[in-house]
Amino acid sequence: MSKYQKYKRKSSEEKKKEIRYLTKEATEKMRNVSTDPKEVKDYLDFMSKFHKYSAKNQTLLNSQYNGANAVGSAKRWKDDHGLYIRKGQKALKVFAPTKYDLYNVEGKKLTFTQLNKSQQAQAKSGGLNDKKSQVTGFKLVPVFDVTQTTAKPEDYPKFYPNRPQQYNYNGKYLDNLKEAMLTTTKKENIAVKDKETIHNAARGYYNPEKQVIAMSDNSTDTEFVHTLSHELAHHKLHRNETEMSTGLKEVEAEMTAYVVSKHFGIDTEKQSMEYMNGWSRDMKDTESIEASLERIQKTSHSIIEGVTSELESGMKQSLEKKKTLNRMNEREL
Image (cartoon, rainbow, N blue to C red; front, side, top):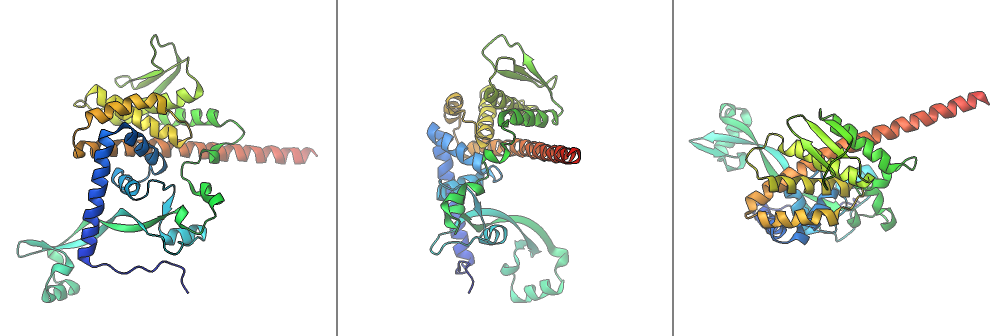
């Protein structure tokens, strides 16, 4: 007997209704984010865990279950981890891209199901291929949090996407994180001057004309990681931006740095909260909010993926070096 949850197939109208409802929920969540600094922080905390998801899907997930930590489809939980969905658990929904055919018939663009029986027969035989085009849309797909699976509670952290301990090797986590941040930044063709004397309270700055990031020689390790994330975010977000206000640029860079830092276990809430307050004041409409959050999500994801790759590469090299030393010691014995 299958352990998968059984789902009742929904009609096309029911699916449309569900999409409208969840989109409305996500939009409301975005409006709340724009008016309440605490909502901003909570949203960014959520983003640090689900940086791979679009801003819309992050908002959608958060509106359904803000305690989520690691999500996947029932099939993925089973195939990758041997876990099943517990009985009675309600699926969370996210948008996934899907491709479908449109037929330009009598001046109207119709899906296959909207064609009449005669036209459907033509389409199946290839008779409407010259009128067919493929487009990408979105559909809702079910996912489940790890807490909804048969995983043991003590094993939940193993599945969290932002667990920093996975990179804590040789007891030098912050040193490794700093090096990974520096390498990721330099791969963007940016020179980093990391021991600069800066004659103000700033911990660093980005010069877009010279493609240089200067870092203060008076920073702690955690400040260094956070500041470099902020300045790299400026480069990725704003190097060609001429219309955006300086204030909004600073807010987007800081919110990106907050997400990146949080993902790697560094909490910068105290420093970042002032920026979050500013963002809440400046965001006036849902379209602006969504566009800004989408930029922050994409940039955070890009930096996190780059740093993660460098950390994993460093860990692999460290293990190879250790194996080589062990082999040499064995030969000497």
